[in-house]
Image (cartoon, rainbow, N blue to C red; front, side, top):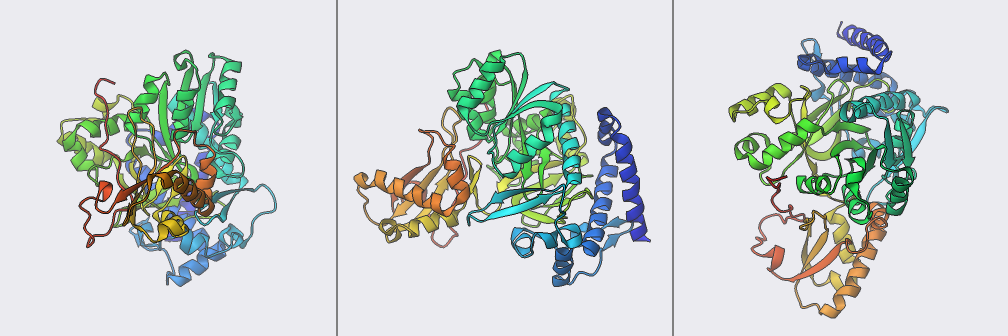
Length: 509
């Protein structure tokens, strides 16, 4: 009976989706107010169907379920209990089973499939297969999201994400070509500047890229940005409100963030005017921040997402777990742990928190939807994001041990990512040493250290090419118990990543 409910629900949704696709504007029916609970449960039903089909047609998932002793899908009434299913991640699922075994039917189709890749600190690329059907579904939602956020256009998109086989650059190019003028340039300042000058200020430009590169572009382009209509969309890492304000004050019209993952989907959640207004309120409203923010001193990026397409939850340690609910995915992902730290607040709960401090959603932004919010704090596995790469303490430790001069004298280290007065993000690797290191040795040591780090971490090696002179990471040394190591208690686990300074947002902006 319950399997019949799943099949009937998904078939109705498929027919409804085809009806909605008759006209772009009709997709807005998905976001009608008052449908919050309905959308949430539809996501669970779709997740249940994705589970049922994967359990019958995906060899890797069949073995994964058997390994965890799972024989069926638990239910709560007529709603699947997705939270009772085992959690997968890159280590226990993606790396444990071949790509073909992770696909529906146990094989990569011979046609209509795009292969892109992401790379980890090991330097070995992870390949992801995406079918024509899932690319088509993703394309439609990206089109709808872009129109909802920026208006109907026409838009001139400059794709400044890394080009080549990497997921973001490839998929943005494929997804948005039909609805825009699009030029994929990669993170290349001169080429982007030449394009803007060639085509002039009469277009609605959308420049997409990593936050540090977008700031570098604004600072070094030599353009009067107020003469151009430019919206920037960032991804790969978070952006502070200080940096957003900096870009807006330089002439950029709007700045929005998108959360995606090559493991899952290009656009899982997105910022909008309401989420930005709420985030800025958290900076000045301590009572509201105490209710919503789980980690004092850490300001999350706030996104909204469609729970009918992505069922999101968090573990007891606030690691984000996501199920892809669309049945179009070639490689099902069910309760996939990105190892990002975040938690979900549904809109009715948010309204209660706002009411407790005398606010309503309308007070923050007149236009908003009742989609759930994702509060995203960054990587849960102690990873620093810098120019689109992920750098771990393990990478730093390996680099230290790989240099004989450092291996015997470094007792500890920590990573800092401060912003200067111009909102420029920096990366500092701080070493605690047990004996004096001559200042004359430091420049040579810094060169050797970051060369070793590039050798160990492929992501860092690729990102290094994008970092301009003057913004390159710095190596700093401190005597025992000084600087960031002052007051350190050896009985307490060491903090290898130091949080940035307290978030700041100027009231006058």
